[in-house]
Image (cartoon, rainbow, N blue to C red; front, side):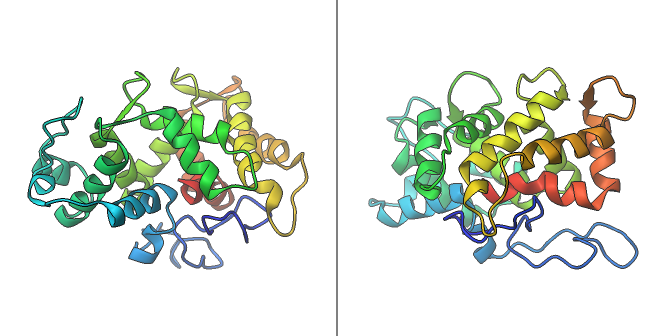
Length: 258
């Protein structure tokens, strides 16, 4: 998956990290999930990473204050570098680079929803990224206060790019749980899938039909809602994804558009 939205599989089965899938997905011969190796090339396919790196390239000034993540003029001052390194899978050097770009784009130390919408409209100019950017922002905005701190930003990216299978699935559940009530309805799942199609799916080759999101959601929701109570809990979500390779590959579509 490339950031320009071209060359995406017509189904919801793209590789989450820019690597080739084996016939059995990303599972070994014995059916055990294998964590994909993350290369710098793979990282650069992440829209948010590209946004930060591009900003870092144009940033000027001494690096000493950046190294300690200190900025006296911001409204929000991030935690120490050592704490963030312990909470994420990023190296010290990677955190320094990410913070320089973040600070350059968001001098206040906070990023708002409009910034997310701008980022995704730039990377997916042929589609409408507004709704997806809104949903993604809410998934990062853990405090639900309308702004994202640098800590929340990099912790979320760390899970999505380098987290374990279960960590990624928990993050995905949070994305699909739009109203944050602890369960996913079919309407919520359809809203997320439709927003992704609006942003890039309609411009794939070969093209996808307008009813594709609904078809996928009907099939997946029926498998996930094991007790037929009309909602999917986090346990149902994780267990179904881990046991069904098609759902695992498809439900992780959002990893290609972060």
